[in-house]
Image (cartoon, rainbow, N blue to C red; front, side):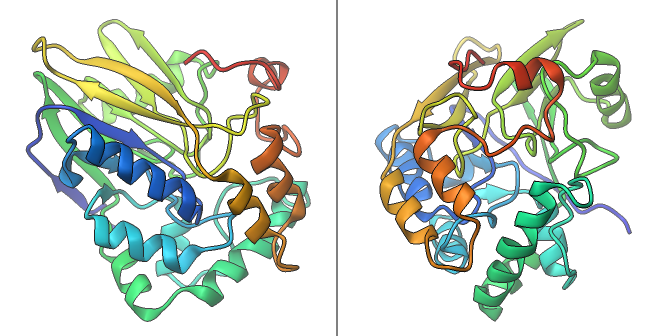
Length: 274
């Protein structure tokens, strides 16, 4: 199937985030941060997975729609719009994450209205623009695989393939759940992190990033965000969602490190330095 790419014109501060994961409280807080900093909705870009592990998928999609921020389709949106039976996260079959997905994904499917599904179906696969002279594209995992987990420790050669395929200078990516930035040969890969779940660092805060072109060059800052995580966790104890994820919202520690490479797995519980 051909990819749907949205081409936009953008300048000024750009708020980047990913993985809202049906976390309404986190999205509400991020929206207020954007408004406080005079970042317009069209300059707020999500790397996908608006829907996910938390308890309010319908409310989250509707707030996102009302806000007017932009997003690409994560694997969850792709599966939802196709009526698939699983989340498409590329979890190892039989793993704990795979087992948990058999709870939260059907729950999300059951809660979404036709209005929300229609909105999800219109989300592009990628967003492309030029920023401070750099050709930029937003991907979820990688260009060739929406569910590919790419971390800071992932070999640069793996990242290089997406730069080459898209002829880009700047890649904004999501999916892996951890914030980082990396530059090689004047090519910049940015993962702003996710706002729906903590970054496995022992803190309940979540992560987003801000691009700035004030100096006619790209600058990137990552930010930790506090929000009403206690309410998010409480709502997840509804007997239908994984309680392990509700605990992660509070503790900031993932239930397991199945998807993580050795470097990132070894950093569990330590502060994040994107």
